[in-house]
Image 1 (cartoon, rainbow, N blue to C red):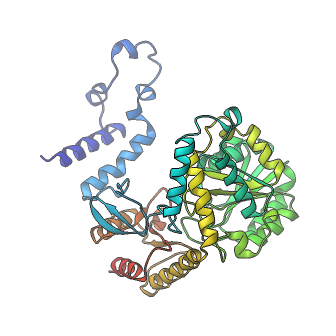
Image 2 (cartoon, rainbow, N blue to C red; image 1 turned 180 degrees about the vertical axis):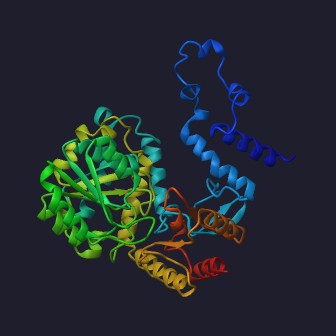
Image 3 (cartoon, helix red, strand yellow; image 1 turned 90 degrees about the vertical axis):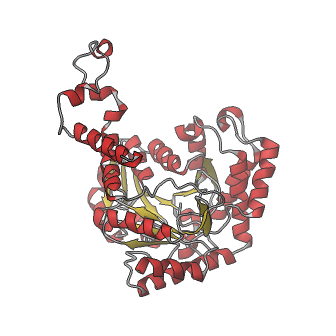
Length: 439
């Protein structure tokens, strides 16, 4: 029997045992030594074993099914160089639609040069919390540049985009408050609400009338209210009605937070994000959040807004106070990427053009692109997790790298391939990908 068949058989047996289909010797064979187990006989064996953790057991089920069906694992592919419009995986060059490198600035010569210079001057790590041990000029320069970009008072940079939302929401709001969010909001917002202990409500995706109605009914039950939306939804590629949201937050005396992880550098004539797209002043949104890992070619997250908000977070938010500061070379890379984006608006224009071309091409071939409006993120909805994984595998065999999005990340009927468009993609890249998928 081959190694792969042995592994599949072992996993299948493990799953059966965990699901209770086997008893007796099957469970005894995996038990702890009596010297440990006898100390607390009332504690089930599963409570002190990671291989019995419910999450791991759940993970094994689709893995075993994939093995039986001969479907390769589409995740954790190793890229052997810069992942842009093309990439090298397992020694093969592929057209790449699985990267957030929207403006082609990760790997850009001047961005790399800035990161190398910062490494030579400051080393690779800030080595401690900025509050406790001080900061490097480049960290502050990045914050000032982002604040100026949004035309607000100030900005604070965190080391992780996910942690930015978790720490900001978790610190600013509490049990007497309400956080109401779009139904398709990112996991980081949900985790922040859970940490805050606030009441949570969602409203139907991009339905500002429903949001207005909910707040009209329940706003008076809470002290602070926070509305959270995304500037560009990373699963569906559509955007919210920002002017409508601003009017609602003013009417109901709420805060508005916009997560610009995917909209900065993508929306607006020069990449100014959803604010520029709608012609809205930066001060009309209370909390601007974004990440540095997409258009800005680095890693981390930021909050921009009024001075009181930023000072509060810098001196008291646990995710900033008790965390190391952003790495100097990463701060320098994102700062230079921001400058390049502003110097070279043609990158944004080309990205927007390519995105619309891909959307039109996909629709002309009868592909279901869902809610996408052609803003760098374009799904091809196939309606089955297994089908999405198989399609991803077949495309990879043809030299096209695109990741499947499967249940539980989306509903089973909404399983899809998700195409991220870069300004570096060519019309030939898109034609090849769409024709292969349609076939």
